[in-house]
Amino acid sequence: MTTEEVSPLRFEQIAFLAAGAPDAEAALARLTSRYGNAPAASADVVVALGGDGLMLQTLRRFMGMPKPIYGMNRGSVGFLMNDYREEGLRERLALAKPSIIHPLLMRAVTLLGHEETARAINEVSLLRQMSQAAKLAITINGKERLNELIADGILVSTPAGSTAYNLSANGPILPLDAQLMALTPIAPFRPRRWRGALVRDTAQIVLDILEAEKRPVSAVADHFEIRDVRRVEIAMDRATELVLLHDAGHSLDERILREQFGY
Image (cartoon, rainbow, N blue to C red; front, side, top):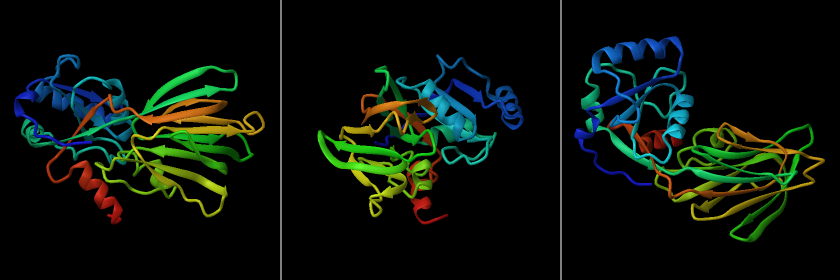
């Protein structure tokens, strides 16, 4: 993950996207009246109006395309978003700091032998589907590291996603430029003292579901769910770059650092 200077000439054509909520739609109308609304395919930048859910949807929509995304908060949490202001938008875009993030690539194999792939910007999580706890085995780079984890599940998080579900599961907050992935158990029962691990973002992670028919598990890449899995492989997709823009002084790096100190 790197940062670089961005030329203001890139931001003449702006495409606006709204979450559909009344506040977001009203903002869309006002901003379109002031700045126009270019087609997303030809725009220099996409401005997403909503919350973190819309930001994830927008990043996913433009995944693999060299198109920067700038969010303004018209939702609830808005951790990934900038403050909403209508004036001086092109100037803000010209001064914004880019963060390049990479998604996780998940390959899941179901009990019936079907294979599914999906990408996750925040995390890949494995979750028990029924009342019984899941049983999982963890292999890193071809070496088994834990032969049995009994828990509600486990998740693998990117640095960008470390302040989301990962943090709620008591996982570590990662600086945006950390070349790491967080491996965090969800409500672990055995082994009691295991609280997760940090692995390099070049690692290949394999999660095998033990007693998969008796203790069914689903795999979720952000919001895309695959049920009844028996094996999940996870790696960082460094070939795919997503460019996220934040106002100077309020970069994603700064937000993550503030989160570590609780404000």
